[in-house]
Length: 180
Image 1 (cartoon, one colour):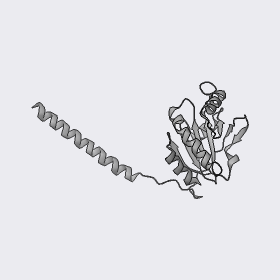
Image 2 (image 1 turned 45 degrees about the horizontal axis):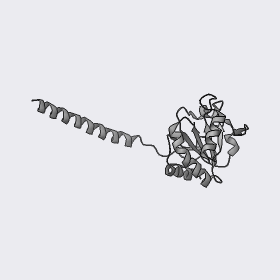
Image 3 (image 1 turned 180 degrees about the horizontal axis):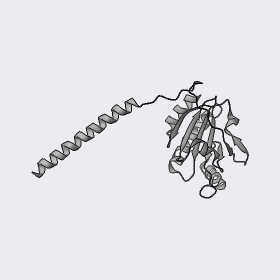
Image 4 (image 1 turned 60 degrees about the horizontal axis):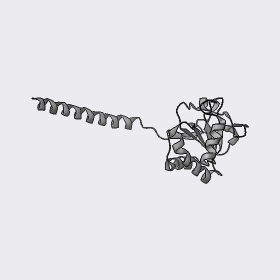
């Protein structure tokens, strides 16, 4: 008797699981979206912001107008951020003359300080350009409430793609090639 109940429960569970799987695939196919278009009708202009460079100078996103931009929000306390930094460093070296990299550090002055970040960059020999978002202007403009967050902006200043989470070198390369 116990064995029949177990088998019946197992059968019901498998049917529910199969139904959920089928419903997921059916619904996800109906709501699948294409990559955002960068045509003038559908284009979303990248919000401008100001951050500080490593010398304390104010820098705006609009300073890089006419050039594709890879915008990345990160912090040294963020393990996924640190995991993707070697790929950003490598590809910045490869694409740096064609694409602007804006590695925006979420600098709160307590857990994340300018001096601490500079020491981290030196220790790891990272050469990508780092900007400090000490007033949270950039992070508010892009809703960077979870990091790492990467935004890919074309040469016309339009947001083409965004990616939440750590990126592999291969994924990062494909996004960069899309905005070139």
